[in-house]
Image 1 (cartoon, rainbow, N blue to C red):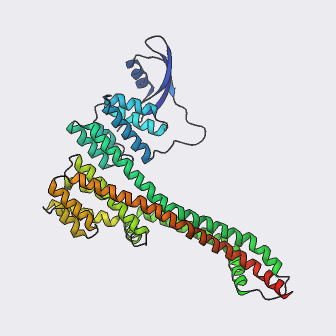
Image 2: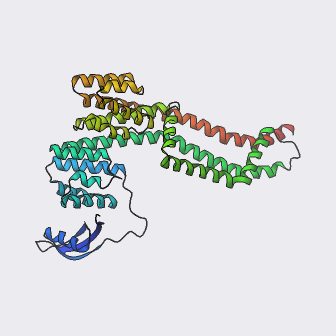
Image 3: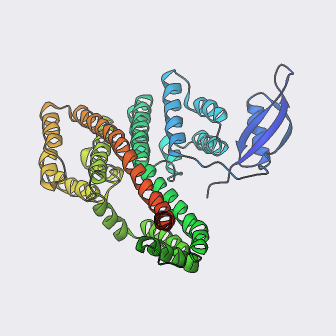
Length: 402
């Protein structure tokens, strides 16, 4: 079982007699002191780094991982040795959690592990695709080239995910705000008008009676409404996290939603092409690469299609024919793959397919945002304006009678 690494802060004297201080990561205090002595530093004080008073560790994000891989690629391309590159990148990282992760990897490599096996100990941050590509780079002696390709792959996939989230977040946020504003009006504002209307002694318009009825329902059962919404959100997130069948149905249903389905379909094709291009260019055999490619598509339909393609290509079927058999890839993609197979430049053609569909997703997100803005404004106007009209309609009618 691997020892837990701890961050220590230290003060000491270097070879020139100057006082220096910093941080290091080790399994215990004695090993931290030994590491400092190897660096030519006489440690005077070594203690565990105190935890922050407010808040815990910063979460490690996929962006942090992408930046780490890019920095390692740059360091190694400049001729910096691997262990020294870990030290430079780790010490310079702003996220303490990421700094600790990098220094743990450095410690494993110093202990004799390969870079790939050190990454494999942290599957939460480095998936099989990254581990396999790093391993291929170490075996071929072209680690810096493979790190550059992995970094580019990570940067592009994270950019694609950000675009998808942008397209989904904006309308969802507006709907939530609209619901909260409507609930406040129905619970706190409408009752004030209701008390005023009771003194009129006349029948209220049907629309006003309808809004007052909704307001009464909200006032009496607000706990059930908000509790039901919270329970539904909880059930949805738990079902998505724990039930493969629910995730599959959700993925299939999402592809049928107008506009959004087309956006998700193009994003899945872009991920498929980008991942397969990266792995194929690294020399990973096609059949072996398919497992990682399937997981990277991000959709159950394309995952299942990719796994069927893996089985067919393992049996001797050409990739282009296996893609055509699935029926989920556009003819243009199949033709590009066919050209790549015939010319021996499959990775290049897949890269062009990925570039094309990533640009398509970018354009669709911009177009969707432009389309949604007036629709959302109209929706908010109808909801809020309808409530205002319902409340002032009796006053208008009373003024007309007078």
